[in-house]
Amino acid sequence: MLTLTGVVVGSMVGAGVFSLPGRFASETGIFGAVIAWIIAGAGMLMLAFVFQMLANRKPELDAGVYAYAKAGFGEYLGFFAAFGYWASACAGNTFYWVFIMSTLSGLGVAGLGSGATLLAVGLSSIGLWVFFLLIRRGVQSAALVNQIVTIAKLVPIIIFILICLFVLDPEALRQNWYGADYAGSLFEQVRSTMLVTVFVFLGVEGASVYSRHARRRTDVGRATILGFLSVFAIFASVTIVSYGVMPMEQISQLEQPPWPGSWNTRSARGAAGL
Image (spheres, helix red, strand yellow):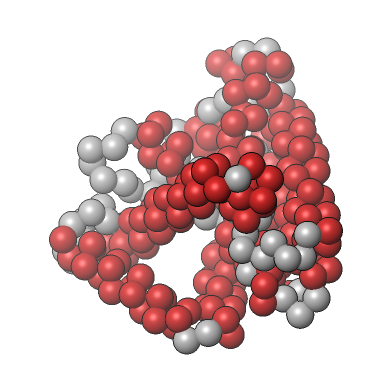
């Protein structure tokens, strides 16, 4: 169950988490952010319960979310569900490797640029094939790779939360409670952040993809719920503690990790939410 939980967490925690403080601060204050997280969290928790019930009631459907679409609506919609899932995985891997290469470039590695140079593309392709060959060896190798990657993603995020708690300024929290003047009314603040809070939970179905390898079908549902609650706590914490460090106007202006120059900031942030 812990391995499947790691799959859920690893599927949900992506590049978008690093843009959460800036995106929230550009739209809402603490009060609006809390409301948005509660609404989105409650809705996605219901979806997690759906996956839990499906895993228990339809154990023969063990090929992921597209298996449910095929069983419920036929071959045609089942195909498009599988195609869409595959396309989102391709896009997600691209965004991951752009971040990795641009980060290495920022650390001084020459030739990687913003993550879209020929050298960066070549190294990213090699990295993808290495992961593919490891996973092809069997589910144990896939689980090990996922555990390593998930831990590598969670450690810096948890460190960030702890640092923010250490330097927390109660006055900054007070000033950011209702949001800056540009944020608008509370309703507008919540509405403008709801899309972000929903997108960051993509991947909650991760355990169902590997359900055929589970020792017990009940582990699939439990891993989905546990993984969702863990990620929800992390995402909400990243957002809220940021308000206690500096005014939200400054948070909204913080630079995000670099992207290819042809992309504008808003498009890049929207893509990162995937």
